[in-house]
Image 1 (tube, one colour):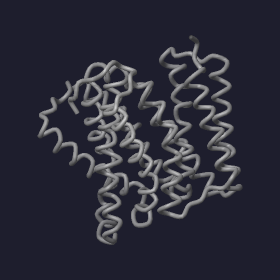
Image 2 (cartoon, one colour):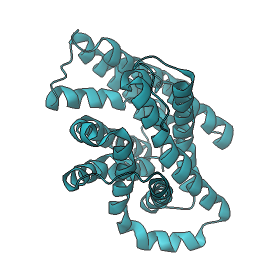
Image 3 (tube, one colour):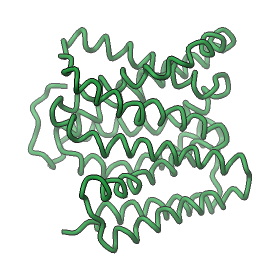
Length: 297
């Protein structure tokens, strides 16, 4: 994780490898969550996953002697992590009880539009006419995803929960800039995952009950979620951003829903309908428009 960084914005083999590792693991998380939900309820599942991630990161910190941020920065990271780790993952798990893995990934992929809207309000990052058009297009795509599954109350409720998850992760990204500049992306990521686990401890009694009833396969799925899509993938993403910058790394996020849909099809037999796929394509097109042409030059 300490290899010399190239010029920011220039993609090298090591950075590309870190990005691809991240995308594969993050895409697989949607399938892993669906598997975990067969034996765990949403809150305990999130706690189990991030207890594993926290233990993994504490081991990493002890080996690398990563310094602890100052107290004020820890409080700032902790507050942000309630939104971006605790609420995001509990809401996503809750939504995926009725929303297929690939469909959930398409909805989460529209999250950058919410980030852009929040940034235009609170960070002075204005949107131009194309930015507002892209926002409308992306939200229209999400509406198509809902229509693609009919008017099922459970599915619509699940979509709203996944959208709420996307909102809280957007809050997390918009308001982290100041503390990120002070503590660095690596320390921020490590402490964010650890501190974001703390509020989930309210689910500890339920987790203790569900642990005893879960089969070995469910435990393996949660161990996988904690180590790979959580601890490792967040670290490789941070590593890539530090080397080549956020704009280059973020441009690869459009690949994640494609991988998630393929994995859900191969492992779970989930095949999204034509309207759902169309809605996902429309939503991603809106996100692309916002991120490439949506801001004044």
